[in-house]
Amino acid sequence: MIVHWGLHSYIVDYLNLCFCLLGFPSVSISTHRALTMVGFEIGDVPFNADGWGPPESATSAASILNHPVNVPFAPFSRSEKLGRIADWTKSNYNNPNRSNNRNNNPADSAFDFTTDDSFAGGFNADDDSTFRLVDGKPPPRPKFGPKWRFQNNRNQLPQRRDEEVEARKREAEKQRARRDRLYHANRSGNNNPRREAAVFKSSVDIQPEWNMIDQIPFSTFTKLSFAVSEPEDLLTCGSLEFYDKSYDRTTPKNERRLERFKNRNFFKVTTTDDPIIRRLANEDKATVFVTDSILSTLMCAPRSVHSWDIVIQRVGNKLFFDKRDGSQLDLLSVNETSQEPLPESKDDINSAHSLSVEAAYINQNFSQQVLVRDGKKVGFEEGNPFAGEGEEVASVGYRYRRWKLDNDVSLVARCEVQSVMEVNGQKSFMTVNALNEFDPKYSGVDWRRKLDTQRGAVLATELKNNANKLAKWTAQAILASADMMKLGYVTRVHPRDHFNHVILAVVGYKPKEFAGQINLNTANMWGIVKAIVDLCMKLNEGKYVLVKDPLKPQVRLYEVPADAFENDYVEEPLPEDEQVQPVENGDAVEQNGAANGVEEKEVKA
Image: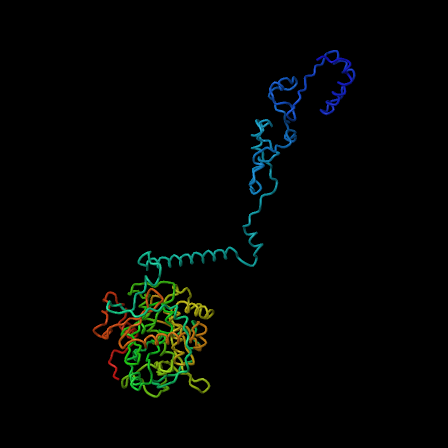
């Protein structure tokens, strides 16, 4: 196209406007004339009817003479984004889950064209991927080192405290691993989910000719309640020695060695072998006859875990509750209610049977050591009914007491007290028992360290591990109307020495207050006795046995032959290889005597 002079004014104005926008100087009139003379040609400006910018067709783009071919319409500087303003047609913009996604891709923005080929993406993509801002902030200071530690805790030594914490963690891990090894070693297999099923057996072998009459779960015992009147003393026998108050000041720092009393005889005579009970039965003084150890076993049955059995004889209109010869009722359980399993091997000094023998041995010697042995005694109406003439017996007093259960049924029980003490000029009777520690690793509480500062924690641990034994001792003290019950804490000289022991402390409690602390309800105890007596009074004359199930919290009542548990019916003794082998002859005889509990001689009525 040839520019004519008639169009000078229009072209001059157009070029001046374009040059001003591009930063060039304006075109003068002489320039116009030069253009007219040379013949300046301006290409066609195509019209894009579909949108902004030049058309996308190659024909139109090629028609632009002053524009290179295949060069996108886009700026070449990062600071000038003069291409498309926004693209609202991207699929990710209308995604409904886009607002909930916190990790949105910046490339999904409607204002980003870095991935668009038409927007210089061919040569800017690599530069954008490698472009990073320089972080001018200083690196963070590490929170360790001597300066940081002592600025926060200047009065402490964190490094020493960390070492102590790590040492405690390592020790706890060792103890946990040891318990796991003992736990797996003492179980016969992995298919035993309950500790009772793996450890305990029935106290008596159930014979096939026995007839089961009733089965009572312990859940029914906990709901029973019966209020009984004050008891009546029918007869008192035996003699008591005074309690030595100096033992109340015993501490782990001034411990006392436990002595052995080999010359004193201890009697654990069952109900029907008691001459006083026979005499009271002949005089028709009561309907039910029992001893305090058997009665406390019934009262505290819901707390028991080990199996036990009681022989019941119905003779006429009377009931006699007996124990078998060599019954477990003569022994004292150890860690019966603990969750930590004991070794099952009988030759282990920490097995359940060995600990029961040791506990009976400790309890008998402790009850005689805390007395004032100066010859002064408090005598009762009659002497010891089980002792021979000139025989030295242990300090014990028997109180034959009667409770009225209803208009037709009354109960007589032989109750025991071990010592007497003068308080304000009056004699106060007391029971004496001993708790024994065999290995602190089983209980987790070391008595030598904790008795002085945390005596409550030691007692709480014993209440958890020996709930049944402590409840039975408390029930016996309440039955005997003892004014005080003394509990001694006796431990081994060495955890592997089960013959030598020391007394660490002696604590006294009032029986009724202590019963409240251990949640022992007197009304519930008598409710259990009343229910069992009512059940047995409906039975025919004969012999029965009440057995605690070793696996389940329940008792079963069996009818047995009349000659059951007699001399020709006694179970066979254990083989010699399964019996506990003593280390010393003298101590072995002493412990066997404590285990049997009953003097091996005929008691004449």
